[in-house]
Image 1 (cartoon, rainbow, N blue to C red):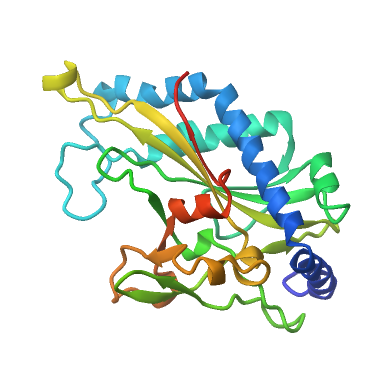
Image 2 (cartoon, rainbow, N blue to C red):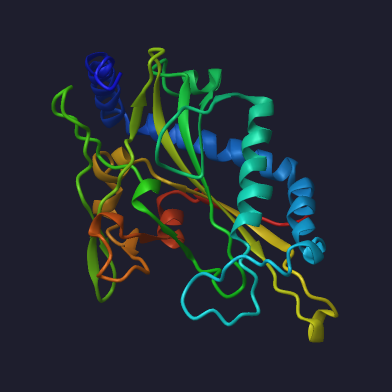
Length: 296
């Protein structure tokens, strides 16, 4: 099976890759459409999302003796790791809510975002001028509390697409390394995701990278009269497709500090080292790429 589709995929891939490089506005418009689609889902269902997110605090008696392990460096101990709360009550919920309005397929892929699916829409066909009617949506959840709610988020190689070089059908696609450039240090970053996925049905799905960031408060008994970690807000972030980053319009050339060094040490496998992506620069690329949502 590994080799059956390679030749047909190779020609499909290059036909679409070349078209998107020649017409980057098609990818940009597609990202804008998918971002606003998810924004509308969040706004329309914010009350349900908040209710189910906050249920985790009310259920304290049922998990307090078996709390999740602390993560990060030198945790203080008063903050309950809330990553899985966001993954389930926000991430999985968004996938379900999207599937109620649009056709989606959970295409098998052994690595990538926590939630990844191909979304089909007639609007996508209009946006891309008939090139495709689907997109491969990579939707990651980045839960944060008041201590780590920064103007950036940390992303791994499996959450970013690259230039997608595929020179021969019986070789494998590879991405060129990128540079994570900080004020004092920099390091090489190795994106692992393809900018486009041809599928066995003949369709081709460009990759869309979304990061939904639930932000929770930490209630303090002395101040609030109770403890808990309720939802405060939600941020939706769209990181450009790898062809936009590296080929046309080549955002990484115009905005070299979009990616800057992450929190991994130099002893880690260089191919797995993460980067931070700047929300300030994403806003400079397009003011719709970072959007905040609060209870009305």
